[in-house]
Length: 238
Image 1 (tube, rainbow, N blue to C red):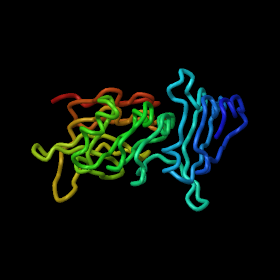
Image 2 (cartoon, rainbow, N blue to C red):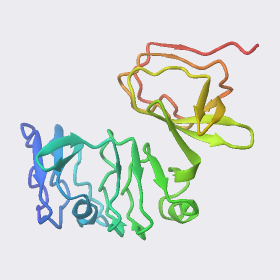
Image 3 (cartoon, rainbow, N blue to C red):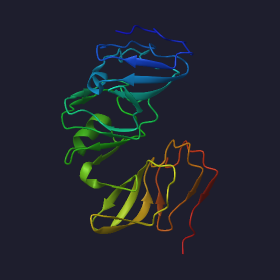
Image 4 (cartoon, rainbow, N blue to C red):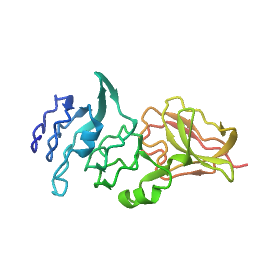
């Protein structure tokens, strides 16, 4: 167990490795007031760490800015897009919600419970086919939840495609050099890019210039929130 306020205010602390043997983290335990690299070696154990989340002072990170890293055999990598292990049945309070780097999380069918603030709202949540309703009931309608078969991954970007109208909506972005594709081709089909989805480019500070594809007719809620854009070109409707 890591007790309440254990590392609170330790602004010089830049990295903490959480072993699988830690089963409980109390409020403000990791509130270092600074950037903090949180390194885990067992995602299943991390999902199951318990907190005192029902307490009004339950925030374990406080004013810290945490970044989640995975230790795989000594190789440390920042987690931005990953799958939750298939043996996980619950995701605890603040397991992932405070990590602003996370862009996509793929959830398994085994999950039966997600506590408040278990997942980050800006992330793309991918669930098994036929399970969107069940996961929406756990998370709420404010999350971007898509079934696996709805998504296409083309040129390091996720799209939701409409098979009837052969159109595509940009959902997520994972590269610095974005190209404003008007069409995408996958599975021997070509789709016209007609929309930028909700929160598609949210919190991407590396993005400075953006040209909206001329085929796009709608831009979703908070699509560019948190970006450091200096220039954006929206095509004139012909």
